[in-house]
Length: 443
Ligand code: AMP
Ligand code: GLY
Image (cartoon, rainbow, N blue to C red; front, side):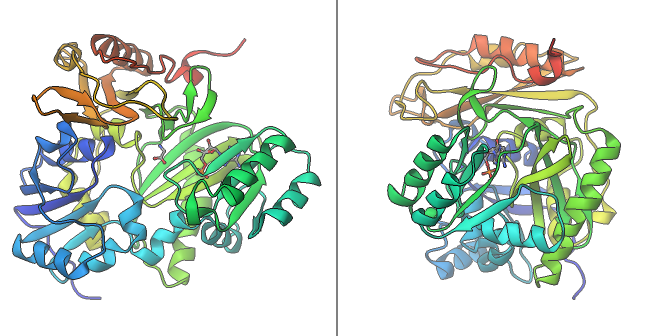
């Protein structure tokens, strides 16, 4: 291996993606004195687009030559990839060069998220604790299996399904319907060519994100997302309704065990398979009575987990991302604000089902003005845009990630909810109970 590329005094960055996670990454990158021009692939998101220039060419991996040429001409030093789609399509393989770093794993290593069968096999070979599972290639044998097993299960499309491909089932009827959705109705297209059926695990769900530079692993403080749409954890799963960081559910000794028994072994197993993982490795864990078990690995920052993580990050993000790519993470000290950050996601009526777009949004400035010298409100945009009249309007199911930083979880959650009350758009809804699993002790 050659010498690591030194971190440039000033570097131009191309940020791929256009959601709340990318707004948070751009917001943090803008605080770096090393940032030259920030180029964005998404000109729509009204919060993100004001932070950089719009890249005029498509970066969807369909034209590698054009993507490479544009990066050469614009002297891009660092490409930061937000979503999993471009990583699974090989953007890191296409854009990395002798003088350009790409934050995110190669196509082969991104299979840890893009192919759940690949991930299960890696876990099996490395003895990593995860739910018992079976793989199916046709609906008939899957039905046969479900009819013979009464326990609640989770039916999952093996490929990428925009976070919607895992269907949690309480009984056989629901499981049979899930099989039909995935393999007969083909709701998730070819992502459902192969399916996994696994035991439903009980417990608290936690997200542990780690930076991995091929050798060094740096664990970020654990977060807790809230997947279900309704307060009290009811209704269908979403991309995530709100997250806070850090979470007290993973005590330091359990986090050390997670590192030693899950994260180090998976990175080692990938290396044994010839895959040098670089980027962020997101481990979705269930804290079961039998110990932490892996629900999934993702090859990118979580959304909305990224928003509270960035709100707390004190260290220069450019330097962290560069060191992860260059294999020099052990030279960097990553520091976080000791306070808690809580992100509450404001959504469009109907989400995660069909919803309308184009509803005028007001009150963001009032929300951000709730901050003072001790606490802060940052409103990250997920699905917003400016309409032809320049009015800020909704443009997605998840619209805003209203993020508050305060002394403790209670204060951060209360402040985020107060900020949400300042913001208005037709049909807006959000969960007021983000963090309740900690704040409310059950009777
Ligand atoms: P996945 O795409 O595999 O992460 O699954 C999406 C969501 O479904 C997870 O974040 C969990 O909330 C839920 N889930 C997935 N697998 C299981 C499981 N084995 N037991 C319970 N819940 C699960
Ligand atoms: N918040 C869940 C995810 O990003 O997959």
